[in-house]
Image (cartoon, rainbow, N blue to C red; front, side):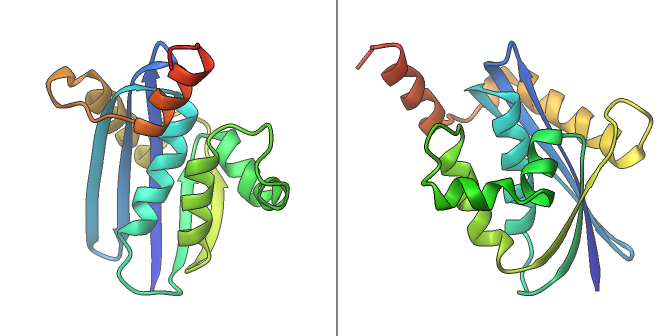
Length: 159
């Protein structure tokens, strides 16, 4: 069975309110997921969308196609940069917490990344964009990106 996953991330202000959108499909099965965060970045939401999508898979060693408009995520995986970053302890790299989480779940499946141009009429990408932006704009239901907010406080000398 092949699982097709479409993902997108959004951030208002970058950093700012953010969200991700996910559409999982396999045969007649379709599932949509989204969540919003009060203070985060677009890249974090793009990567978190992929992580959350892979976490939905109940069986190991699934064949998975992931479609994303994020060159950051797609290239890091397909060009194998993330493995070099990990070998060097993610020194000087952002989002190490999410990349480490990604690598754990990625190893459990056979994943192929596919880059799609954003805002170009691709139905899966367009739907994920709607889910991500609606989640980011839902100010009454935003989650906290604890790691990112803590890093920002540390970088800005607020701790």
